[in-house]
Length: 67
Image 1 (cartoon, rainbow, N blue to C red):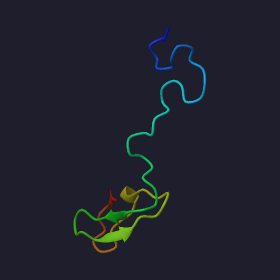
Image 2 (image 1 turned 90 degrees about the vertical axis):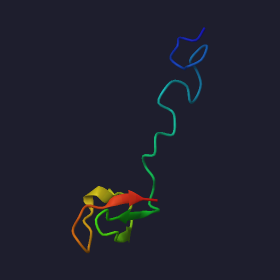
Image 3 (image 1 turned 180 degrees about the horizontal axis):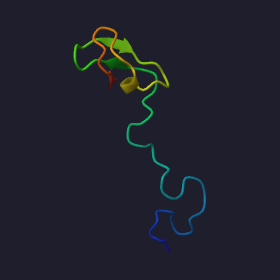
Image 4 (image 1 turned 180 degrees about the vertical axis):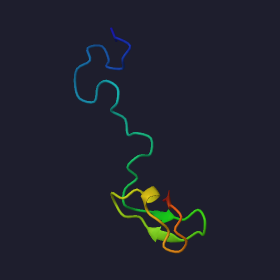
């Protein structure tokens, strides 16, 4: 009988249990742009660098992510 934890009848085999899903949008990848919410400046996203840590080259505001 299942134990109510999503592992199935015996809880054996690959991809059993919780936490094996694809997530909720984290790790978008290297594609896309960082966009300034203040002036609209758009720069290519750098992989591994969160857009929120990048400052706009035109006005200095913090950038946001766009795909």
